[in-house]
Length: 312
Image 1 (cartoon, rainbow, N blue to C red):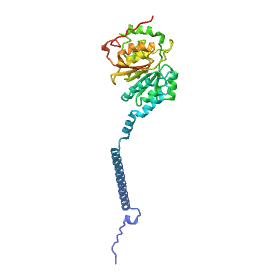
Image 2: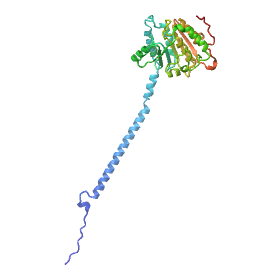
Image 3: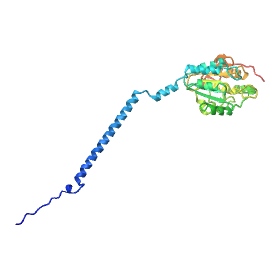
Image 4: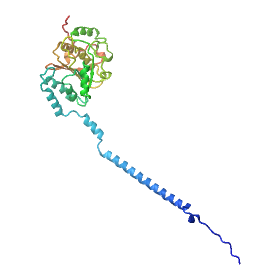
């Protein structure tokens, strides 16, 4: 008797290890695992960003706080202490008296920060001016490149420049005669000093100095105490032009002239800063308040010209 044909059905997924079904299952598990990892990573990142933004919103702006602290004026006790110690032994040669220091510091204290303070001459008080004008801009101009380099070496944060004062004390009257001939041209009270050919103008400072709206200018240099020394005629003339040609800032500029009892300082202050603008004299310090003007107002520095006796 014949038996029927037998069929053997093979199942590769059962008899072969690592079959296709197992591979599908393994891939499916890995995909879900990857999805879960991405989900947790996204959730963690989103939470971190949300917390950081909330913290920024709730906390004060540190940069703004730091800037506000930096822009704050010098505390009154510190200001007074600096002024006090600078006034000690004020009888030493070349130093300002206590009354003179207080006259300048009072204006510095009232000056709205930032205050722009231009000083002609390196002196005992140089560091004091830079400190009292805290958060302001103090620029020192001196005749000595050596003193300027030493100042910058010891105090690199101080802005200082040397300038060549080519005029001498003995040349006062010839220079004033030159001014009177050129006051409607090169020696006008309103002009761009950088391009001036007036013999009394200082035109070799860094260009940006002429664009600063100076609030206070102190003339305490160059030396000017003997005939062959550089005179202060050019410094006083330049201060008068800077004040009248001022761009921006307040309309008035405080100009202080030290040792105003000397001939050069007195005559040039009368001519270029004007007696009508003299608000105070403290010992040997003259304090002028000069208003800016337009070129259309004329060629006279002073509304009431001063007539001096001239030497031959």
